[in-house]
Length: 267
Length: 267
Image 1 (cartoon, chains in turn brown, orange):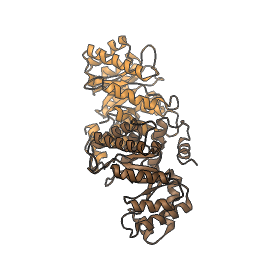
Image 2: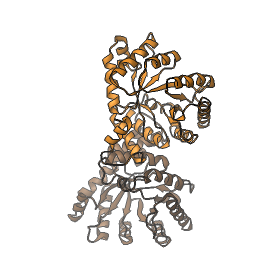
Image 3: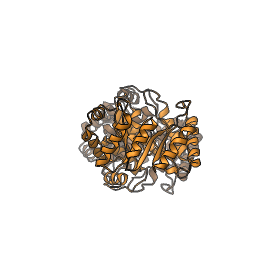
């Protein structure tokens, strides 16, 4: 079944940026509750770029979120010290977002994740940047899995993000990416999870929901199971659960949408 | 790009059954126009089972349809004489629906199709019925393609229907079928087209449109390109065109839905 990562508690969104500035917990908590009800398995927590003391803001976001939900948290920052600040105050289940695939960076993040019993998102990015082709993405994923073995890191707690580019930036790569997901999934048994920033795909387009639904369905068939996405888009969540039932991940019944939501959230 | 076959001019639908009985051409012609505008590349024409003189009804349906649209027609009957009756009066481009894959039946239908410069839907059904597994469907498809070579039948005019069963009848086969489409598509260059009765998949379910959209998107990625479908379901047509743009079958633009419709219908 899909493991949606709710994208909405992120300082890049104006209402969250203002809530952070005004220390308005209720705006954050409202998104925490609504995303959880809508089917978020994880809540992404990202302070954005405007916050002055990013560590303090991360702690505050984690704390106010935990006051109202026990949903797993996806601690999202490119800065190690901000991630650490989030981990320190977290009580809920954890996913760290993210480590790049350079060996020396994985050697920091994997032990850190193990220390907090957290799962870890690893991007298929290294010192050379985002690879332009399939083979290099798959090769970098192999490096990640090798490092996980070295650190005795449970593969079921590895989430690989092969970097899905926006359709209006590289239209040819969308279908090629499904090949990347398939190849990564067969690299290991159990396979790692696959995540991408789904909304990124339709960024700057006019038909966001339609594009997100199409790329989600075709990607899920290839192995994507943990997209960072707009779980409050009901059409998108319905498409995700419908794809799961068509893929035979749950038994079909007339009330499969409701049953699927309960399976995702465990509630 | 998708080549949708509009399913609505079919005596199995009550309003068409009544229109046939009352010789009410305008009901049929209204569906002919509306389906064409909605993006039908072909209009399926099926007399249903209730009609008394099926040959006469087929002729009448073809004639009244041709009075208002020049859309290609999909002459749909299990009875050879009813198909022939349709072909005799047809002026528009033609697709015959359908021949089973028994060699002696293909030896009748392929020359008939060639005589009328028609394309031909071939079911992966033979004397043993619908195969229950992937391998047998693919093997029967190979028989169809061999027969096409023998008859010097243009492969680009062959539409193979591997028989998609309803989800509430065999839930496991939906994803397996995508494997069938992929394997059939690589059997020949150019590949044959792939068709299925899409509405059949969600027959008797409560979430028809959601299920049809999910199976359509995942099937198109594997090679399905000519589903018999409800083209009047705008959400479904939008999903089809969106899947085509994500698959890079047309250039992305903000108005891709409109551009895609024009590409499908050539208008």
